[in-house]
Image (cartoon, rainbow, N blue to C red; front, side, top):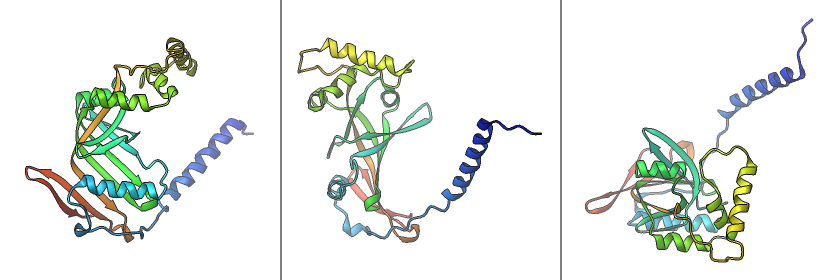
Amino acid sequence: MIHISVKTALSGHFVRKNMSLGKKVADIRKDYLQGSLDLDQVAADPFAQFEDWFEAAVKSEVIEPNAMTLATVREGRPSARIVLLKGFDERGFVFFTNYRSRKGQEMADNPMAALTFFWPELERQVRIEGSISLASAEESDTYYHSRGRGSRIGAWASPQSEELPDRDTLEKSVAAIEARFAGEESIPRPEFWGGYRLAPDYVEFWQGRKSRLHDRIVYTRGAGGWGTKRIAP
C-alpha cells in the first residue's frame, strides 16, 4: 500500500495545475487595433510628444499613468522595479527615492538608466534611455514637503533595500521617528533621500498594431538636436 500525505498530494496538484497554466500562457494573445503612429504625426521633440501621450493616458483614466519601470545596472547585472514619475520637462524625467537603496547605489556606480511606461488601455509604450543626475536640493525639498506626513515619516524610518528581521522592526522604527518629530509639522527632508533626473538621449514611442506589426518611432539626440526614425517591430 502506498501512503501519500495530504501535503504531498496537494503539492502534486499544485505542480500539475501550474504545468497546465504554463501551457496556457503561450495561448494568451491580444491584437492591437486602437491606433497608428507615423513620422508625420509626431512632435518635433520627444518631450512634447511624451506630454501629448501622457495627457491622453491621464484622460483615459489609466491606473497610475505615471508608473514606470526603472532599469539600472551594477557590475553588468541589470535590475528593474516600478517607480513613479513626479515631473518632466526638456531637462528630463524626475523621480524620488532613498539614495542608499539598491537603485540609488546602482545609479551612483553607473549613472545610466532606462525607463519604460506601458499604458495597455491605449496600447502604447514609451521607452526612455539616458544619463542620471541628482535633482537639486530645492526640487527635492519641494517635493518632500508636498508629501503626506506618513510618507515623510516613512522616508526617515525605512532603511530601503536593507534586510529586516521582521515587520515589527520596521514598525518600531516608524514609531521612533514619529516620537522624534512629535508636534512638528515641518519634518526636514532626510539627507539620504531625494530626487533623480534622467536626461534622455533615446526615446521610443510604441503604438500597438495588428498582427504584432507595431509602429515604433524613435528620437535620438545628436550634435544638431533631436532626430527621428522608424524602426521595425
